[in-house]
Image (cartoon, rainbow, N blue to C red; front, side, top):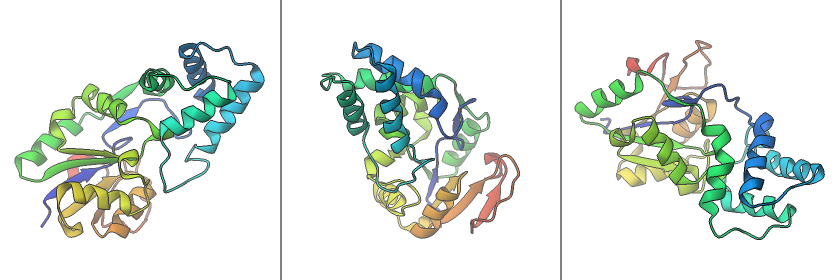
Length: 229
């Protein structure tokens, strides 16, 4: 019997409107904001090297299942620029990720669906892979901005777990937080890696296919909107 209903976050519950899956085109703006915070003026060559670092950690270009922290990525960027690690890493994170977070939008059916689910008993969880080791506090800010913070019992990121989907260790960590078995959990996501993680872990896999492409990744069910849950 299901006791835990869990979701992916990006493009499942919320979206960064207009942002492509690969953020390469936004690297210069994000790096410029970071450079301003650490008070450095990188040369074109230094900016190109920094973009290469970001491409290395771009999971759309180089998928990985183990997570890397923003602290590590920031350290590599600043080393290229000859800057010592700042005392306030959170300020650097705010500056760097601001470019990507500026058009956050919650899908309109999400709030009503989560409230209805909670009224029926299941606990609500979110497991999300984060880009470039995005710190947890920024994810929590986005969830609060979307008005979902009071509707989620457990939120876990790939940095919390140390792994990214499709590794089943991601949802193992989620289940451990809820003290539930795989057969008690449902995971809803919009990408192949979401389905692969759920199937590998042994919980029910639900594909959210908002655009109607109807891929077959072995999911147990396919829905076109969360209201179908």
